[in-house]
Amino acid sequence: MDLEPDEVEKIAHLARIAVAAGEIEALNTELSGILDLVERMGELDTSGITPMAHPLDMPQRLRPDVVTEENHREAYQAVAPAIGNGLYLVPRVIE
Image 1: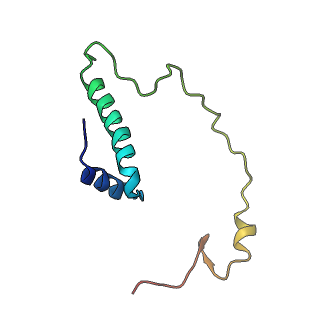
Image 2 (image 1 turned 90 degrees about the vertical axis):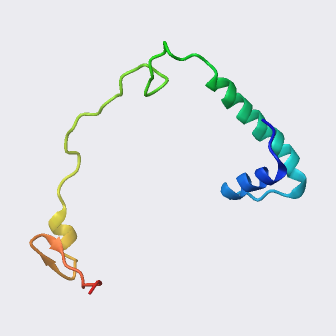
Image 3 (image 1 turned 120 degrees about the vertical axis):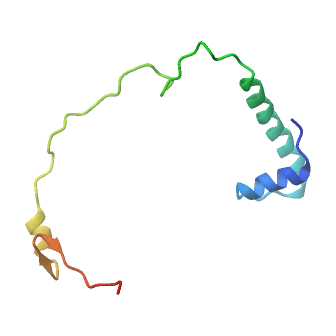
């Protein structure tokens, strides 16, 4: 798929990439190659292939669900300017 120079500039603008005038032709070649690869991949027959969530077929390692830290709530709130019912009280900012 061959792109026009103005299309390459538009893609670069959307990607927020600064492209000099001399780089447009090289970028056009690279983008065209990527788009050709995607087009070829779209032509493949994938009807007999089961979709996967991850390319490696292995279970996720899980850690035990246990408490690893002590509760320091009182110590943290002891230095707070104002607390109420265990919550930090702050000035109202929206009226």
